[in-house]
Image (cartoon, rainbow, N blue to C red; front, side, top):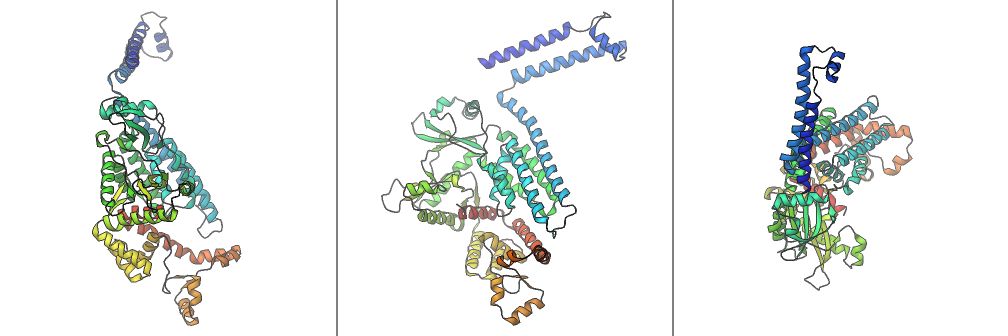
Amino acid sequence: MNVFRFRAYSLLSTINTCRLIRRNLPSNSNTSTLRAIADRFGVKRRSRRFLRNYILANGLLFGGGSLYYFYYLTPKQRRQIKVTFEGLQRALRSFRIGFLIAVDYKYHFWTIPDTSPEYDSKLKECHTRAAERIAQGCIENGGLYVKMGQGMVSADHILPKEYTDGLRLLQDQALRRQRSEVSQLIDEEFGCEVSDLFSYLSPEPIAAASLAEVYEGRLKSTDERVAVKLQYIDLQDRFAGDMLTIRMILYAIGRIFPKFEFSWMIDSVKSNLERELDFKLEGENADQCYAQLSPHLKYIYVPKVFWKYTTKRVLVMEYIDGIKISDTQKLHEANLPLDEVDTKLVEAMAFQIFHSGFVHADPHPGNVYIRKDPNTTTKSNVQIVLLDHGLYVTIGPKDREALCQLWKAIILKDEAKMKQYSLALGVQAKDYLTFAAVLSMRPIHRPIHDMAILPDIWDRMSPDEQRAARAQGKMRLPSEKELLAMNPQQKLTIRKDFAAIFNDIEDSILRTLYDMPRPLLMILRLVIVIIFF
């Protein structure tokens, strides 16, 4: 009724606007306002009729456009028009932030060489300012931008600490939408009211993220307690435009700073987001995950999907009470042993990586719940509940075999096998040690033939070996204690001596990330998340 009344008012307003324009059109009187204006600006008499018709046409165009927008367009069509204009605003804001960051770096390092004593402090300051600008831009743009920012936080194995620290606040950021959007989304997906599906739906979301909100509810048909995941209503509409903007920004960064040319990642990111925005695919992933794990690992549980109430933008699953895996205090209070939790989680992830090849690629603490297994009374009753199955990667048999052998070689410190299986996974021969170090999240002990020799290795070398190393241009890395005891001039000398080595290591890491198979990038993130749970 209110919508109809609003449209009626819009129609009357448009009619009245046209009447007022017509009523105030200039007559032949010399006192006409329009004629006075025309005389003031030197408009010829024959042009006055054109001016009058121009004003009338604009009034009709504005009034007719308003009438069409509010009276004839559906809410979905009006939302799409709004998203288009807001997309331009988001793009301009993003380009402005990117420009400011680029200028900041170029200005402060125009005359400062990387061997300068003040280089490190200036670089950290620029990193901090850039992270603050990016975080603020992500918050203002919302949606996919927040998701991308959260992804940058997870890349703490690649990005400087100042970036990950500055962007960490995005992990708690989520869109807050009006309740009317929930009703509108249910209407668009099911063609009915919320009350037709649910006897209860919580007034506020119990969880919110960058792509969706989760509500607690009860099915009207069975009274079962469910978790209702609702995608933000305009994400599908703004996806293409926002991804194009992000692609252009990454391309521009690569042109300005060639070492940070990451535009090649955008296709993988886009593909991942497209899958995460399809909740029917998420439901299928959940069912497949449980079907593969449950016969072998009885302690794994995945909530049931209610397919009758699931669409591309709505997902209804069994409601689970549990404790986040990161909440160690509550786990202690519930008498759930942490060592058992750790062992079972690593075993489950290893099964997916090395056996099934169907890997949950986003197991952050909010997606892994721990509870007592309701179906057992044994002492070992920890049950791991896996949530949020929107993002999975598939590793083929050949890559799984190579990855298994590579891990074995890393454990046994067999560098010949490390090189062999790194090559099998697409990494260049000269980068195999970097690849092994990045994958295992620890340095690989390097033999004497490397350029930089660690202090503990150097000290075990004979005098003849040390002389041979020096003759070949090898050098010994200083220990932490030695570095702390150095004066500024000595540190500057060390920095100059090792600048080439550090640049080579940086280039090797970037090459490795580029060459690494895309599924392994997600596996790398998975390993990091598990390590720091």
